[in-house]
Length: 195
Length: 146
Image (tube, rainbow over all chains, first blue to last red; front, top):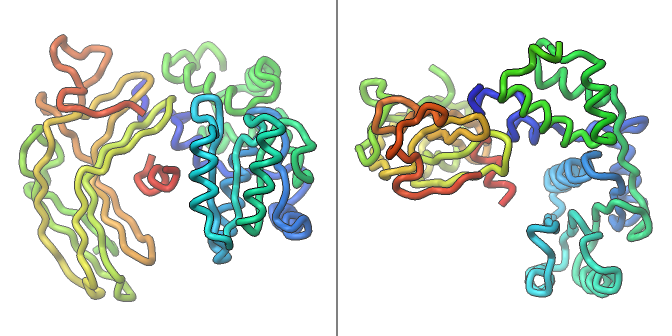
């Protein structure tokens, strides 16, 4: 199968929006306001933290709130130069959305956080563990969520629940990794083995 | 007619690297946009990081609610349109309307063979990267992430 025809190609996967479990997006936004736009989206890898952060940015942008999304990860670390540039570019009325805050050392984070909040009106971060900022939401996944997402990407869904459950268990609930495995299965056109 | 449309001369969607690509754009809109933007670009689709390169943009300012404009782009020498299991490189023209963000896209193939190059069976010496490029969805969403 050509990459462009793969139902699990990255742009289709990236188009999936955050799906709250046992809450609503409006409730999350209301809590964010209560927390003064200083909050952490917490959760393990592949649980939708970055997706939710992007969704929050989209809503804030629509509300006319200026936002600045900053990504930090192992391949693009938020090193001293990037931190300095981020701080110098802040214009005072922005909400900073920092994905991967826990890639910073705690001491660096404390200083960076203070400096951001001197210049910005809000700071929303993603982390794997709580304790960096008040928790906005603890992101989690379920096998049913994986099945729902796969059903949206595949019409009709030709992957059995048993297979999806196995993938979910193998990847310890990391939905992103499950979808990458499904990409590979479709790329090799071996889905017939799974049905 | 659709609200926005892109027409290629002779309905030519298969192009040779370096050739001139000509056509016209047409629009029929309820409210007059500030401008229309026609972009020539390529993007990658597949498993890995997405990439995009906007080769050329033509802007039509204050185009009114109804009209037509001709365009002409000189295609670069590469990269070629190709597909493998892990990545596809797709060339396209995209016409966007601001501020309504109405969009229409037309894919083209840029290849010296007259077909999208399939990596599994690509012949030796026919590199899809001839003329430059880099590995890496729709244009706006990718640009929005940069």
